Amino acid sequence: MDSMRRFDPDLLQTLVAVADAGSLSAAAPQLCRSQSAVSEQLRKLEEMCGLRLFSRGKTGATLTPAGERLLIHARKILAMHDIAYQDMQGVLLAGDLRLAITDYFRPSSIAGILKRIRSKYPRLRLHVSIRKSALIEQDAVNGEYDIGLSMRILDGAGQHSSGAADGRIRLRREPLSWVADASLPLEDMQPLPLIVLPSTCSLQQFIVRKLEHHGVRYEVAHSASGVGGLHLALAAGLGVSCLNDSAIPSGVRRLNDEGSFPPLPDVEFSLLPPRPNELPVVTQVREMLAHELL
Image 1 (cartoon, rainbow, N blue to C red):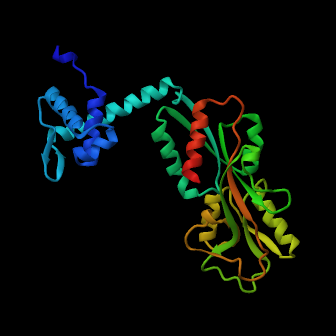
Image 2 (image 1 turned 90 degrees about the vertical axis):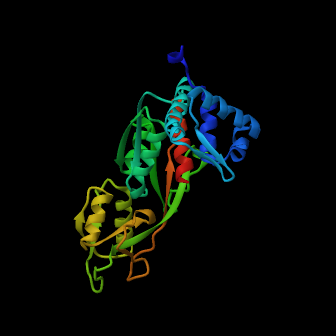
């Protein structure tokens, strides 16, 4: 019966490949078929539909209106085939994935990262916590999340570059800078107006120790709850702070070569080691993040 006819995924894959490549000859190597075999696949598909799907010419193959409609369905059907196969292989998880990310890590990129995870693993429910690195490191032992992305200060005093030896995946290393709004006058500004995060933030503890060690007088001009609030305080010209390179917003100037600011080390971002017996999908998301963020 016609009502029971089904599209052959191989034929739909041929349709998509030719539409994307623009010609049968260009699509043939991608499909590991000869050009004549690709032509025969399209003939079968057109016969099944009872409609022409491509207009063929010297410049290649162009979709007809019917072909454009079928292409939309073909992409969806093939995507569902992939999802079904991956699900049976345990690649997809119908459940929750908990991410803990330091807010110092490329703040403008976090939304894009989450979007890519969602696109590849549509059945995952993402739970994202923006936390201080010290808490991420601490909660790793307790299993509070599945994947953690934290920041370490490479100050040469017990903090060393992480790598494969401890199971971490090193993502990037960035310099720290003293920063302030471009309009903030710093001449004869004593004590230094400092914008800080909560005292639990390891970077804030570090810069306060730096200032005190170098005898730089300061006062807390503003306390923000996170990097987003710190950006607002900088833009308002409330004082000086310290940020890693990718967290420095536009309109803010680096002050490392101005005045008597103490030198600063680099920081390193890394994905924390996996927990024993973690689900395959967690491992795959971690590997995807490592590939995307390196």
